[in-house]
Image (cartoon, rainbow, N blue to C red; front, side, top):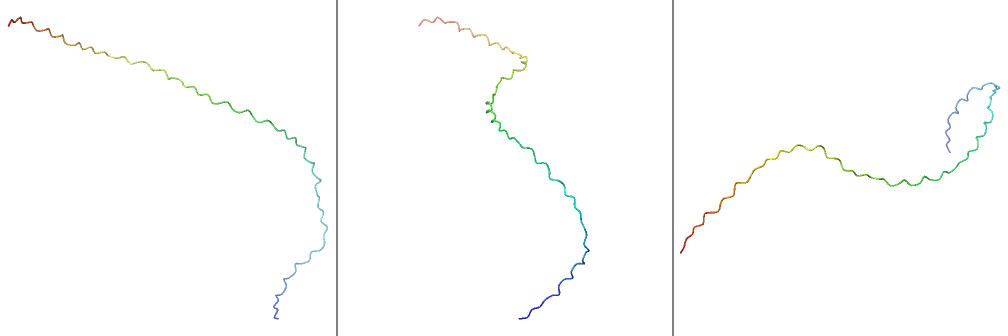
Length: 84
């Protein structure tokens, strides 16, 4: 079989060995213990109270009263005493 190969990449330059000092922080203090207290549920809310009130009437306007008298009654016609 035919095998075609690329040239390998150029290796990075070699860095001389160094001593690296890393200061690691100490272990953190463990967290405080947490006490979970369950509070009872609140009581049910009371029913809404609706108060219906009448709105007071405002001041009454002065009313003009027009009086129209009826006509005087018509007198009865004079009786005719007719003897037949």
